[in-house]
Length: 139
Image 1 (cartoon, rainbow, N blue to C red):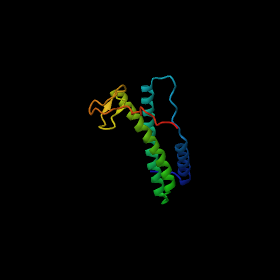
Image 2 (cartoon, helix red, strand yellow):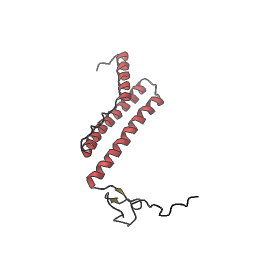
Image 3 (cartoon, one colour):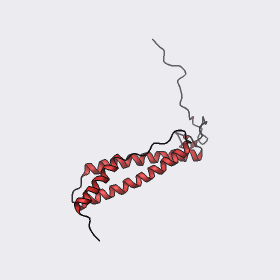
Image 4 (cartoon, one colour):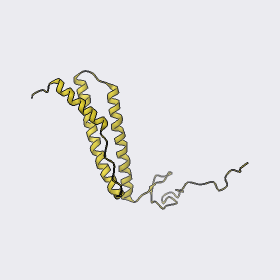
């Protein structure tokens, strides 16, 4: 197995570092059905998450080989990875709700409910926020 000269490896790692920090997912087009956009966004985020995980592992390896672990760099990369993971989780949650027809879950028993529901089908709790019928008297 031939080894890549250190100067070339370092240049390649620097380019990869720059691209990982500046890479932005393409915005979703306007006027396309929301479900299709969310599925496309999920696919983009999933690919981006895998790429970021791969890059973070490679970065840790390269730092370990050089016996120089820089926590600040690792934490910045992990934060980007965490943001993408959180967005992916939210998109997947929304898609699951679309697929099941649920608009939310009951605050009391966590049962799913449809968008027009006023009361929970499982425990009977009110799903709409209560508004005070008699606002405080004004001076």
